[in-house]
Image 1 (cartoon, rainbow, N blue to C red):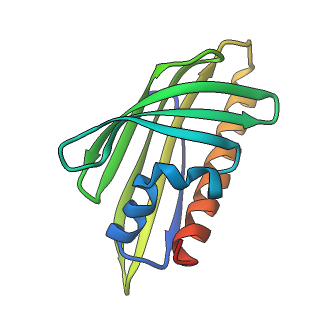
Image 2: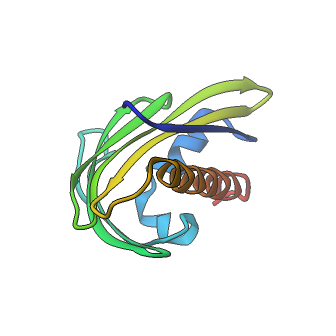
Amino acid sequence: MADQTTASITIAADPATVMGVIADFDAYPEWATGVQKTEVLDTFDDGRAERVRFELSAGPIKDTYTLAYEWDGDREVRWGLVEASVLKAMDGAYTLTTAGEGRTEVTYRLSVHVSIPMIGLLKRKAEKVIIDTALKGLQERVESGG
């Protein structure tokens, strides 16, 4: 994942609990800012999503896109764009590390390319806002018992 933006947050829960919230795509419209609707299209044998369709409305960007997922237990999930209208590419990952005392450090990496021209600095800033909002939403969802 070249040319990416990264941020981390510590959440008061174990990695399995955090990954459980990340893997619950049906609940994303309840806590993931901009996500209007999700649909799990395919699952792996363990029940985790392999491909998910999202409907996004985040400020000027409105899109329906499909992501393909790869899971590494409760340690990491990676995704890549399969198809979209506005997005040209999206690669990302959540990496979970035990932080002691029932806490988990979550690192979010993201690289997004849109079909409209965008200066690199503005693109990084947009990615940073997406990441920060997603991490805070994830933290609130996990720590509230959602």
